[in-house]
Image (cartoon, rainbow, N blue to C red; front, side, top):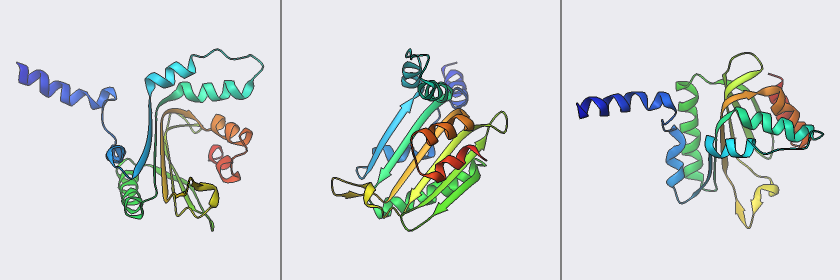
Length: 180
């Protein structure tokens, strides 16, 4: 009977959101910085009361409420950067992610992928990969970053993401994310 329960739990655990991501291997690497924010913290942050007049904060909280998780991995190691690129490529294919856009300039190569959501304005996952960063803005305390991998999962409203990137004065390329 115990074996049946264990097999059952192992079968349904991924369906309950306990499955591991292909990118989780980077969490334990010494030459990779990581930030993983789970649903519990997202729920805590999104429960904060805000001023009714602050539309930017409301938009941010609306985006946050829809998120199930945020994972950010950053490395300055070229070998790990190459591995991230390969892993990201495998993940994109196996998860049927669609390339939303890519931006290449002298400073970096940025790729955005999405997994479609409930309608054209929503996605289940937004994956961003930045490689070949040559901009001095990413040189922090003498560290020169090679790659950044960001995964947002949940019910993501692209219109709200686009509105937030415009208000935060992020690069123009990011403003195109909501205009899929």
